[in-house]
Image (cartoon, rainbow, N blue to C red; front, side, top):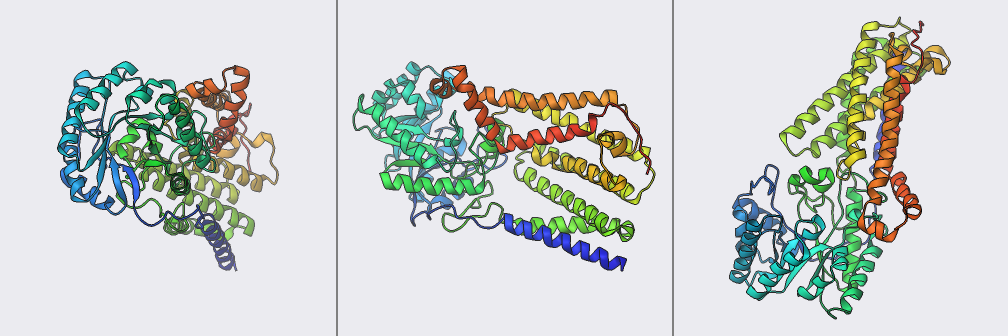
Length: 567
């Protein structure tokens, strides 16, 4: 009878988990299929894991050739950003081999010598490969970064124009051409970046097509009075498949697919010239722009399609593998707790099995996401460490649940380890939130890393309720939840710190929006800008979830008294 009850409860948990996993991972309609044929142009940087232009570790020639062979049936053209750097100089010859044309760029920055060398290499390549290099771009977002004043940039543009026969341009976010309209005179075609995710006022993926049309028209109107009929190239437009949310702009595989398909519809309808950023995910960008910067590719870092260009799209095509792994881990927990489970009532059995299943899901999803978004040995070492920390806390929590559900006497030893584990996660949460509040533009919200600790506290409260038959604020402290005696006067400081961190997070995110140049121009007064910036902040689902994590982590530390409750 007891075994049958356990089996029925286990079957119920598996069926509920399976049904939810299947339902949440249904293929989604993301708009009209991309028409058959090649795309117009893709940003191309052949940097796989372990290679980085920042560290001047450039890919070998065979990597460049392999990548171009993959792109040969996907795009007519590629856009490059530098003309120097190891085998990058072989790109025109390899592009010719695979029938791909180029929009070749040179990278400009602070260094005068580096700039002169880049410009010279661009001129040389353009003149030696006129059949491949169809257009050239002098500098990329130099003005946005503040690396050069506009006059020096114009001098480089003029130098290249005197030396090559191809049309010459400069590439930057669209607002830079509005800020420096003199550039419109200097270039042969206007290259603008329209990245709805990165706008000072982020655009939702649903409104992104309208935003594209609006910006191109705005630039056309500006150019009409300076150089009528000058061509416009959308030099970069795309959407990230992973990373932190900004306002209404949510990175995801489904949203990237939706944006690309909608963008193709817009450019085909209006006849816009375009380049999609980018061909491949770029691991090296995680050092500059975090997870979101590394995940803009149509193909992943291991050269697999991130999403299909036709048909429905799944956010996680491997959900069934994750489901199986979570069930396997859960079964190990069930086996370990088998004897105790046989003695539980149906309600207590379902609670323990449910919490064990939630912990298993948290660990599998954490390990998968962090490993996928780790691009260096140091990042992978952190992944292993934080997964192990979560597993250790999960083990302690499951033991505590058994104590509470068994009605055993409280254990000081277990309580001390639980306290230490939670203090570690509290301190880590404070450190993460400090970074997010002060300079969080490229930092992801670490929700996955704290999902298990937060669920653990909820589980402690549920088990306390089952144990006592009632729940009062007297029980919401570490003494009653962990089974030991703690110094509440010290603990309350952590509750204050976590609550302050939540407020600081809101202030920091709102203030970051209000610093944007375009935001200030659109909303010059504090009274006008503050509500809009605060709205973007509070719309951020990831941010709100992280605030929830902080507040739930603070719950056991608020009690004024440290009481020890006997069963």
